[in-house]
Length: 429
Image (tube, rainbow, N blue to C red; front, side, top):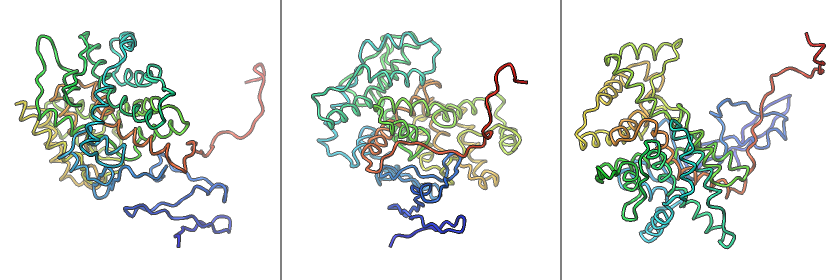
C-alpha cells in the first residue's frame, strides 16, 4: 500500500503519494498538486524541493555521508584514481581492467584540441578570468566537433563524454599558458590524466616539470572529492539547461558559468583570500571571529558551513590529510595553513559555530593544496570544474534517460501590480 500525505484545502482533502528512496529518504510527490488543487509550492532556493530521482550520489548532511554509486568517497579517495571514479559515475559500475584501459585510451586519443581554437584563446583580453574562457571554449567545442551521422547514438555519446573529459584539462592548461604568454605544452601519451595536466601547466624548456607521485595523488584526490555532489547549483543548472534538449557542450558550459560564483566553485579561492587577509592583519583571529558572529556585519568566514552538511564535511577530513602530505613533501611551511588550523581548532570548540553547524567544509583545505601544487588563485574554480565534469556528465546522461523527463519550468507567486491600463506618454505625470 502506497503511503500518502494529506493536504486539506478549502474543506477538501487531497492525498499526495510518499516516495521513499533506497536509503530511507522520503519525499511528498506534488507532481499533480496544481492540476488537482490549483496550488503550487513556494520554496525559495529549492532547499526542500526534489527536482528528480537519481541513482548517482547519496548524501546525508546530518551524518556527514557522501557516496558515489553506493561507494563511500573515503574509499574512492584512498584507492581509486580520478579516471576510474569518472567511469564509475558515468557508467554506474567500477570498470574492469579491460574497460579502464579502453576508457583511458579514449581519453588519450581525444586529448588534443583543434589548432584553430588557439585563435579563440588569443582574442580574449589578457586579464580575462579563466572561468569565462573555459565556459566559452567548452561551448565552442560543439562547432569544432559536430555529430557524425555514420556513428550510432551510443558511439557518439561515449565519444562526446571522452572528448569533454579529456579536452577540458587541455583547454584549462592552454588558457593558463597563453595568459602568461608562454608556449602551449601538448599532452603526452605516456602520462596519466592528472600527471598530464600538471605537465601541460608547468613544463618549461628552461625548467622541465618533474612528475611527483604524491602531487599526482593529491590532484587525483582533489578531483575525486569534487566529482559529484548531488543536486548542487551547477549540477541543477546542467540538468535545467539540458532539459531543453540542448547539446551536452552547452549544458556543461552552463554548469561552468554557475560554478564560477564565490558561493560555489569560487569558495576555495575565497578561503585563501580570507586567510591571506587575516595573515596581512597580523594573524589575530579574534576580530574576524567577532565579525563572523555579528549578524549586522556582512563578513563571513569562508570555508565554514554547508547548505546540506550539518556536521563535518567528510571531504574536508580527507583534504586536510592531503594538505599535510603535500606540504611535507614539498618542504613548504605555509603560514596560511597555520592560520587555517588555528581557526578550525577554535571554531570546533566555539558554541556559536557548533550551534549554527558551521564546521569546516572541503573548500577550507582544498585551496591550500592547490596553492602548494602551484595552481594560481584564479585557476581554483577551473580545477573545481575539471573535477565536477564527470558528475555533470552523469547527471545529464541520467536526465536524458529518465522516462519521467520534463522540460524544467518552475512556477512563481506573482506579487506585482494588478492589471492597469496603458497611459500615453504625454499624459504621464
